[in-house]
Image 1 (cartoon, helix red, strand yellow):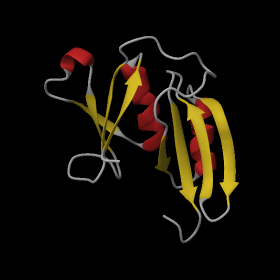
Image 2 (tube, helix red, strand yellow):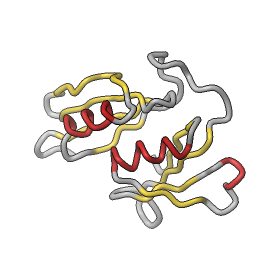
Image 3 (tube, helix red, strand yellow):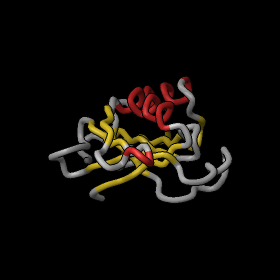
Length: 129
């Protein structure tokens, strides 16, 4: 995956959620002002890195909470899956899949971001990437 986008009904609220969850910062993309498009910069994401991402205003209604996944699901590596999951639930997120161990892979969880997206987080098993 080279680039991903997260569609948000409330871009400011979404950026606050992802800044707290993953430590991302955001910059308005020149030419993207009309759709409230912001480029993401983070530990492994951004200009000059192998992965780039953006957030933008959703062009339609968000799926209802608890609805089946619509679109792709992105999973990001975190230092502590349980801590990130707990943070998400305390800051507007909702459970999609609680932290679960997958032998040889790692500890993984998924949350709804409060805007119709499901995002995953994984702490890889030792010796895994």
